[in-house]
Image 1 (tube, rainbow, N blue to C red):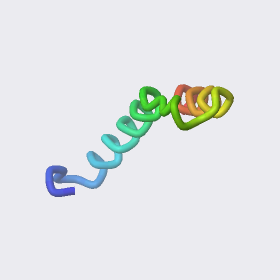
Image 2 (cartoon, helix red, strand yellow):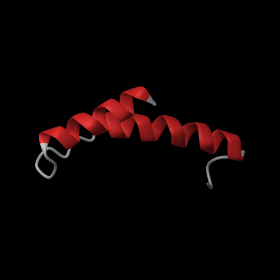
Image 3 (tube, helix red, strand yellow):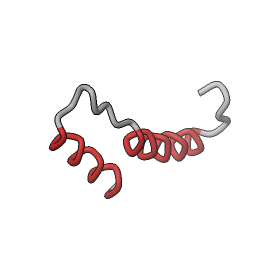
Image 4 (cartoon, rainbow, N blue to C red):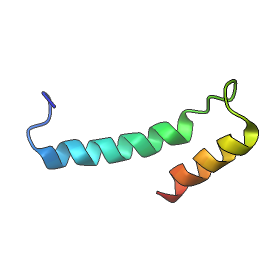
Length: 46
């Protein structure tokens, strides 16, 4: 939180970052294809 002056700014950044990270973090070598589709759908929905 050192670079964020307000907690609201941190929360906004964290919510956007998590959705983008979930969208692009494929981990295809670890997860099954069905799990990947579920994670992608959840990331796009929220």
